[in-house]
Image 1 (spheres, one colour):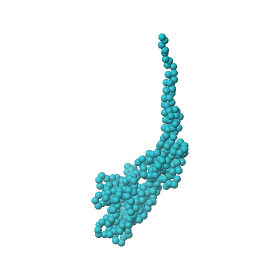
Image 2 (cartoon, rainbow, N blue to C red):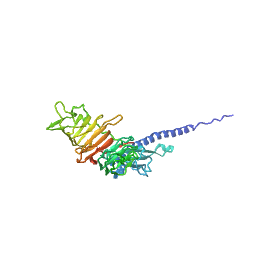
Image 3 (tube, rainbow, N blue to C red):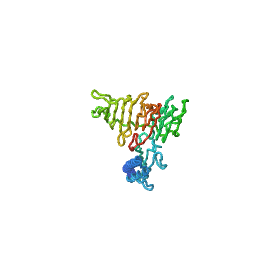
Image 4 (tube, rainbow, N blue to C red):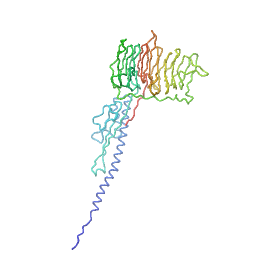
Length: 447
């Protein structure tokens, strides 16, 4: 009987077919995967540049056409947003996200000063079609922050930065004393919550004209007279709460070159002409400077325009001192103090485009525990125009006019840890947006 043998012919074809299928899959993964990766990188670059272009339009105060500018940049990079084509493009503010957008702004949701560009692209496959994959998709996004040129610290005349709840009878902004207090053209802002925060403790009238009162907390603006022995009138707008999405955290301006005390060219000096000392910008251990072994300092001091870096203290106690400075900035380094007790003071800050435009006094002090006091005992002979930026000072304005003297009038914005207005004289603050600390247009890619 013959044994029937089965042939193995054809098995190689099956193995070759299976191997070819796997080979096509690997080739498809390599080629089509590279195409997907290349498109994703290109789409991300397009989203980044489109978001930056749109944000730059907003920073330049050209809001009418910013979305078209962003879309044009995306189109120029190959993403025209055609729904019938190969890609889609969404452009929006982060507080007005399109309902059709596949992603949101993440931690920047709800912020008007952030914009987003989202690109969803479809990449047709070549080899991957063999295994049933017709196309792949990429979804990329870019979020950009923008801010316009203008007042660095907003439209408030008084801004308290203390983030803590106040305790006892002391608020973060206190309107005290017996004189009337007027905020004209701007309001006041407190950076905290708690049972108190903005209080009227004196007997003077309080007027806020053309500005607002606002707080990062709730229910902590308590402008009622509680002293029982006076009846001050209160003419203020209805306070607004939660005025900003997050607590206000300002950035300290950079230390000026004049603070490089190791460079002799930065050392401050002055020239006496008659009974007047003309002081040059530069670095000073203290200010006004003390006399040297060869030269004294006169009671009439004129500060020439520029930046004055002070190491330890600015202290004016001589009632006969006359200090005048136009287009000047006083930068007080860490550990320094600011204390004006008398004399005639007339200071105004530099104009744009000076790097410290609008900054009159910068107090870069730090503290462990209780913040130091920074004090101005002012009368009608004192003029301050510009921003006083003292983020770690309890700032005190004490109006000390004699009867019959003119009211105290300041063109000053005060940004400090806490602020107290007190004294027996009327105090008038007038806010001018062009005279306070200025910021240049800024844009920044966030994600």
